View (cartoon, rainbow, N blue to C red):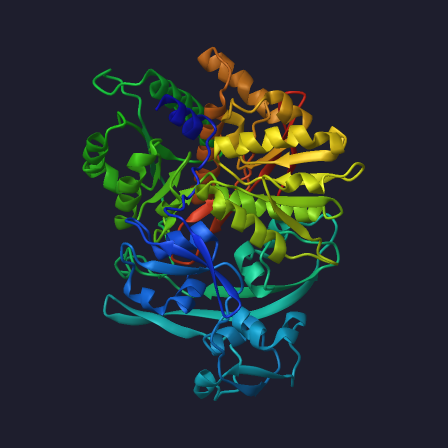
Length: 595
C-alpha cells in the first residue's frame, strides 16, 4: 500500500484508465474493431477515454448502446476509421458576411460537419460560393438577414411595477491569421480571446501543434450585455443541465482544502500521509499569502479528512461547506468521487490536485483535474515527437500487457492523425520480440514503448541491451511512461545509456529564479526546503484562485503550466500540458514541452 501511495501522491501521476478485459481484434467490411466485454462500472464516456475513440463513433457501430450498457455485453470499438451515415444535402449560396461559425448555428450542425460536406471550406468562405448544407435544415434558410448587432430579448424583469427587457446582442465574424514563428496555440487564443478548443474546432485540427505560415480561421464573437438588474431571479441551477455556468463575483470567497492530517492519531493514522498533508498545507499557505498581496480576499478552511469517507461526509454535511466557492482535494483517490458529486449537486468548483480517476470528469463540468491522464500524455508525446523528430526513425512497440493497449492506440492514432505540414513520416509498428531488426548504425532510432507494466518495460530494456551492438548507444532513444521511474527492476544504467524519456504533467525546477526566491521565504517560515508536494500545492492554489477569483489566467508557477481543456461540453476539465523529461547522467532533466 505504501508503494502505491508513493506512486500516486509523490509523482502526482494519474493511474491509467484500465482496460477491463481482453480486447480481441475482429474485422468487418474491411474495418478493424476491438471486441470489448462490458464489466461493472463501464460507461460510454469511459470507453471513449479507454480506446481514444469518440462516443459518436462507438454509437454508430453499436446503436443499441443508446439504451445503456449491460454487463457481459460485447461492444465493437472502432480501431480504424468509421464510416458514418451520409447526410442528405442541398445547395446553398453563401451570402455577404456569412461565416462558417454563423452557418453552423444557422443550420444546427457543427463546423466539422460543414467542412466534411465541403472540404474546400477549410480555405474560407466567399460570397456567392455554392456549398452543401443539410437538407433537413433547409426550412431554416428563409431569411437573408445576417446576425450583426441584432439584439433579442432574453428575459423580462418587473421592478417596482415597471416592466423592463433584458437584452443581449451579438455579431459573429472570422479573421484569417497567419501563424508567426514565435506563436503558439496558447498565445493565439489569448490574443484573440478565443478558447483553444474553439480554434481547433474551426480549423478541423486534432493537435495544438502549429507551423510558421499556417493559416488559421479565428472565430471572433462580440457580445454586449445591455442590462442586468440587481435582484433578478435567475433559473435554478440544474446539475445535469447544459446552460452556461456563471458564478457570482464576491467581495470575499471561501476556499476549502481537504487533507488527511489525521491530527488525533486514531485508527488509520499514516505518518506518511500526515507528512504529505503538512507539505501541501505549507505550499498552499505560501500561495495564499502571495494571492492576498494581489488583492484576493478569501477565507480558507483546512479540513482534516483523516483518510476516512465518514469524516468527509461529516465535513460536507456542515452548513459552512455549502457556502464554499472552491474545494481543493481530497488527496486520496478513493474519496474523490463523493466530493466531486457533492460539488456537482451544489454548484461548487472542485480541483483534484493529484492522481485521480479520469471518470471523475464524466458529466461534471465543475471538476478540474490538475494532472493529465496517461492517455493525454501519450497524445501529447505523439504530437511532440511528430513536430520535433520527423526525420528520425520512430518505432512504436506494442505492449504485451492488456492495460497498456489504450496507451498504444492513443499514441498511434495521434501520430497518424495530428496536424502536420509536408509529407507525414511513417510510424513503424512492431513487437517486443521483433523491434531489433529496425536498429541501424548511424540512424537515430526512437522507440516508443507505451506500457505501465513493470515486466513488459523490463523485458524491452533487456532485449534492447542484447541488440544494441547493431548501433551506437547515442543513436538509440527510449520513450516510456512516467511509471518507469519507479521500476527498480530496470537498471538505471540502461535508462541512462539508452536516453530514457517520458512525458509528465509537471516538472520541478529548483534553480529557477522564482523557485529560489520562494524557497528562501519557505526556509525562513518553515525551517526546511520546499518538497515537490509543496511546490504542487503552491501552483494549484495560485493558478486556480487566480483564474476563478481574480480573473487572471497568467500565473508564475514553480512546476506547472496548466493548460486546461474540457473533455466535452458536458464534462470536466483536464490539464493537457506535457513536459518531456530525459534521464541524463542519472539526473531527470526537462528537454522539451508542448506548446
